[in-house]
Image (cartoon, rainbow, N blue to C red):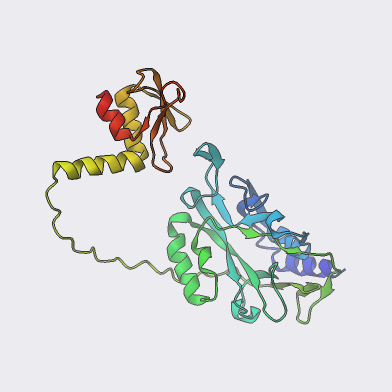
Length: 307
């Protein structure tokens, strides 16, 4: 079988340096938690030679070459895939959709696995080229590393600068037999194409540090007037969760599930006023007794009346 030939070549080439790379998988693009995963070179090759068959891109699973920290709660739901929660990037993925030919994306003498994307066509090729790394890149060094990669391969999608970036698994719309391609170690299923290049692990280009920007000169701030101070305080209470939580402490409200509750109402005096700590809209507070009381107003009014 054709795939047996590819597997045999791969195993012989990596016999003395077999390793695996950590990352993450996601059920679909709406999945914010996913699950930790790990792949060796054979698993990566198999993922490309046996693409998922699907009708809708939104239903396809995704993978990420990034190691994330543990999930945590954000606005009442579990999340994991956040740039701030990344630990390391273990593989470089060139995401190129501008028609750049594969030859321009392959570093000679370097191990790489490449496949065409969901929207690839022969007249407008779109490639995903995966370079496993000898050592993972710590998250705090990824931005400088990415700038070095972008300098070497300027066609790569700028969105891949995000260390939390995820990629659709190799996929096709219908199952086609696996056939040899026109080049060695190239395989096709219809227009879907896979290419393997054997060699050493990628040597990362020199990282490019971000240039420090000179601090803009600022005119001295005018002295605060009482009306300016009141305006700034009102703005903070409309927009800043920490300030809104402080009001809860001042008026004796209870904080749970992202809301302050049971604050005394300035109109009916019952402990029935609530507000969201992360505001939306005008950010007002509301009395639960809508029929008998119906008080609603900004937090600065509540704080001033109850002080």
